Each structure stands twice: as structure tokens, then as C-alpha cells.
Image (tube, rainbow, N blue to C red; front, side, top):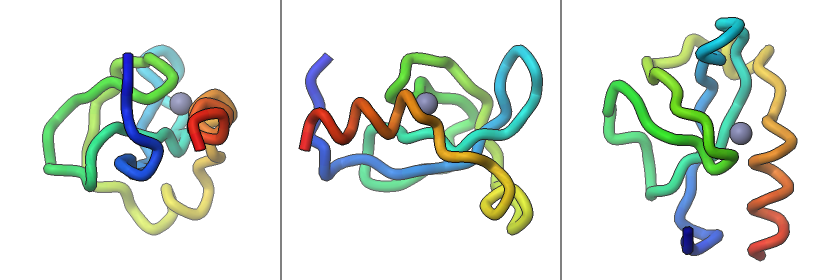
Length: 72
Ligand SMILES: [Zn+2]
């Protein structure tokens, strides 16, 4: 799949398996409040407004980070 590195945003979302939050990258300019989307690293996740705590505690997804770095 082809996407521009500048057109992405980050959002903490829970893992569909464990429910543990991680900050994933998504294609697009910003979250449009859709209820689910596919991360840059290829996981389909449910989306909801993250709490401040989610932003602070959710680790950055290494796969998303690496993918975006390779594109830039
Ligand atoms: Zn990811």
C-alpha cells in the first residue's frame, strides 16, 4: 500500500487481543472520529477518544515507527 509519510497521525488504541493501549500511526490528516481503522502496522483496532493517561502511558508502536521512518 502506498501512502505519504507526512499524511499520518498517532492515536493510542487498545490491542484487539490484549486490550493494552499502544500509540499507533494511522493514514490520514487526523482522526475523523471513526470507530475503527487499520494501523500503519496492519492491525485493525477500535478507536475512541483517548484519555490523557492513555497518551502518557501508551508506548509508541515500534512497527508503525519503523515503517514511517523508512518512508521519510
Ligand atoms: Zn502500530
